[in-house]
Length: 171
Image (tube, rainbow, N blue to C red; front, side, top):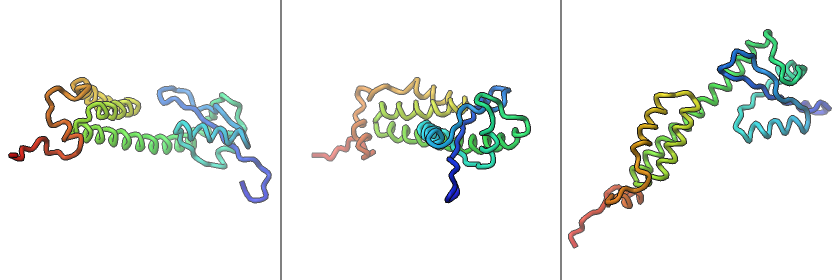
């Protein structure tokens, strides 16, 4: 809002189902405190936010639950592609980080926490539709012990990070 302007901030939410042939639709809109609440909910649920004053002025005139008109398809598609790519890249990096951390925890003998990290990575890959990575993690999780195997003498040393296991000092 420009200094001295009495115009309240506006916000709206679009919904688009990737596998649907329906155009995106306006599912929430508001000004002032309602706009603040829309933005708060988006942040709380990790929904990407994009500011475009010109586009919001056009979309704000639409009725709730109405689909965007064909003349806005290109503009909205570009915006959704940008948001999808930035979100998808973030999810990919997050899934990789959880997978890598699971591997480190496993090598240190913390099987339970490793399992949780690999399950989180699996769920993220599943959400992104990466079936090959989901299958790999399913196979790994199916064969992962739920706890430290009996007789794993090196597990505590692995967990502590020494990586050397039991060392015979000769005393």
